[in-house]
Image (cartoon, rainbow, N blue to C red; front, side, top):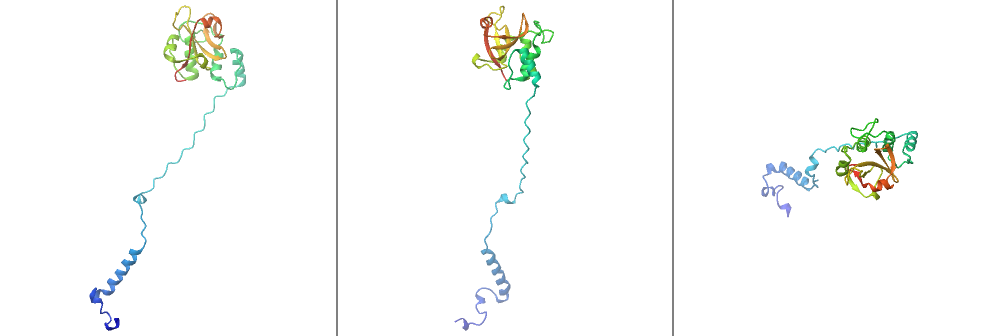
Length: 213
């Protein structure tokens, strides 16, 4: 059947003979390229990769302040307590350093003399970096969150009335451990006392934890 037609007789139905070779080659190239599997790249693939910031190495933990066994033993003797690894060493060493300081009403804490609220104000600033009011009444009303005695911890403040303060706060000290607290007594200077004795129970006002401690 096909032999009845002269060679190239079908070409006029599609294209002029003079363009057949170049156009046919171009058509074959197009068809072959269309059959290839095309890979799809999302727009993000053309964006430059953002380098991840290097993870900074963790800062080394600040070592706890160390105190010599000799200093701690000296403080334990001065305060009349046993000092263990669970105690607040910085607080106890500071308290021990003030033992025996004479009482002096008013003014700032000094080894020449101090009163109860000046002493607590000084020690809190020195040991904890916290600022308390100068007066014991203001420490009681403004500086602490009141807590029941069953929840008291080392360093918490204990408040008492005094013979001349009525129902207001007239005295303040720092709880140490057991039933002992550290304070500046108007008659004996800086000492450690048992707050469960009759005198202190009769003047008991409450306990408080300094805000921010």
